[in-house]
Length: 250
Ligand SMILES: Nc1ncnc2c1ncn2[C@@H]1O[C@H](COP(=O)(O)OP(=O)(O)OP(=O)(O)O)[C@@H](O)[C@H]1O
Ligand SMILES: [Mg+2]
Image (cartoon, rainbow, N blue to C red):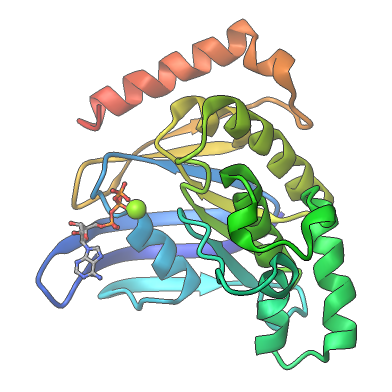
């Protein structure tokens, strides 16, 4: 195992003067699934944007060791599906490859494979509005996976979905994460989802967010519903809940 991502003394203040993120030190190992949980406005999305390099930190250093040859080693799944409404699901998923200049005859089978990975290959020619909310999130994840990233950043991807759909997508996400040997950083407001998915859960304080605590989930993968129904799961959720209260975040 090596640190894929190392954030040292990272803080961020927006030009408006809002101190969005206090000082954080985070190391993430290759292949880890790490969740971030904390109250609204504490800087979780800012943290993801800093990891992605979409924003430069006002202080501290971020080093990334993205070993795969992919041109787009970091992929981002936003809270909203953000699909182009006027074109097919397939064209949406192909977009990152089009932007890299990959020829259509190469890109199209890759996009179809990404759709198959998330189980919506039959909807390649549909328009986004013809899909359910859960299927649109699947399409967004397919679009993120199409470039074979090493690091997958997800900002509350399933927050708008009903609990049953969310549970199913959580399980599917773990399958893809394991198959693709991804490193994942996942923002959520759900402590159950964080415990179910993660190797580690980082608990943040209210803004300006700092890391108040880390919950390690020593449960082997693959995980299934029997884990969700176990007393170990209930105990871990209770511990995480206490940590959120102690951080002033609940
Ligand atoms: N582009 C921006 N310019 C100025 N301030 C911003 C910008 N983006 C976020 N902020 C501010 O930074 C703080 C942290 O915002 P951020 O979006 O990172 O929080 P969050 O933890 O993701 O919240 P939520 O859970 O509601 O999504 C907030 O006070 C927000 O108003
Ligand atoms: Mg956010």
